[in-house]
Length: 493
Image 1 (cartoon, rainbow, N blue to C red):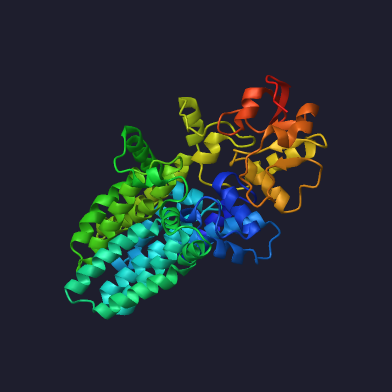
Image 2 (cartoon, rainbow, N blue to C red):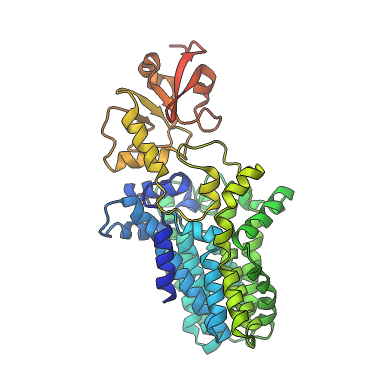
């Protein structure tokens, strides 16, 4: 019942078609059958793309929607797992219901249930690991501990953030073996189970090495990707990151129900055996610290595991706090858990009025920055599709749209190419059909179109447009694009 209710909520919230940024890239990689990607092994996410490819068998017309539905289904699985986990831990349904409701409407988790993203698969597997942990603690059967490792291996095949949880489980396993509560043979089986679960990711690593990539370069790619080593190894957050972290957590829990975290932590102190409480506390600490000091533009997304674990703690706290209280108290706590959507409705207008900057770099056609990022639901959102249609339908025949360096707005345009809807004589450079669509564009590639005044870009902003266009041409607004006009520089032959 909880799964069905969450599924209904997220089906109503999901974006119906193509999207921008990383979500748009996921939709393109599914269409290309690309299980590797161009950003390094750490961002390959092979399990996610196996699942998204399987979802293409759904009897729906829009490939982008089928890819978005992966987030919907695994978001609902996460909510059901959280309910079951808190139900097993507290023995009651009220705490489990509060935990499930709190997580279901937490901003960043809800948002990622509406987009093509890898994170709900991550949380579905992480909560499955916790269920295995609790079952092992309840029964003492080694098969649950082995199953935990298999689930974590799958998590690594989906996203490398699961390695943080593996560190906690590994430390717990060493302690269990040292206390002779787990035989060494069980630890070996755990390693084998993890390897089996991680096989899709490990297979990519082995394939890279066999293909001629150096072992050192491959390991660096597997751990950091191509451009994130400094962010991964950053140890100390600055004041800006600490401030943002408080804001991100507040955005997810704008409700007095968040205060139940404290009785939730107290409730775990009385658990016997202590293993689940210790591991759960360690998981929360390591995922929270990781997110706080991870200095990347989409830092807020890396709080999702911590948000899930906070919702679990809130559920434990609700179970303890409401244990002997009246129905009115229970109704009040449930109402508090459901409060966040009432905050998210006026939030964009309030943020706009207050002049809050969201640091997205530049405006994007048909995307209100405040609505898009501050309201988690994407019901009926078709801004990316409208943008692609307008570019396709309105540009003069023989035009070129230079989308090099613009990984945000290139996605829906490339999606229209790959789905056969780009039928007019209007070129995209680079094309979605090129082996490496991140290839840069030079003046020589568009010489004729420059002379005819038929070269367009989406944004005349450094970082989103080739620098030679910014330096050499006036970029004049023309519909949703900017046209390169009046050369400021005489380019050499």
